[in-house]
Length: 150
Image (cartoon, rainbow, N blue to C red; front, side):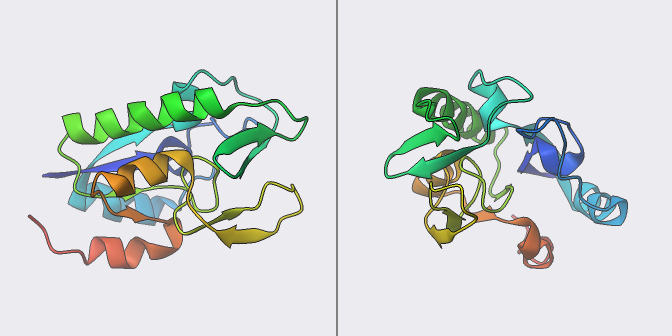
């Protein structure tokens, strides 16, 4: 069975900045489990950030909390761990939380904490994409499930 790196919050793990999760519906999780061996990761907690924590957003090459703390190093550590997990488990793709400063691919918040989206990717998504691992967001699950198997 093919392995899929997946944001832990999408599996219901309460690792989101506010202590919550972004759990996908059970039927969606069942479809994913039928097709893939799921490899969970939360790059933010893997990088050493606590739960709960202040929300963070990317600004340029850095990541900053709402209070202004530079949390870039923790995000970069977590991104490296996510990439290592993907490689160790032979993941050909990743399903990551959209708009996240670590997991979002293609569109993320602009760093102003105003809800404004801009083109870009989170630190982990960026590292996965650079390594040739496609990153899907939760709105692309149908496309992910129809992806040709190896």
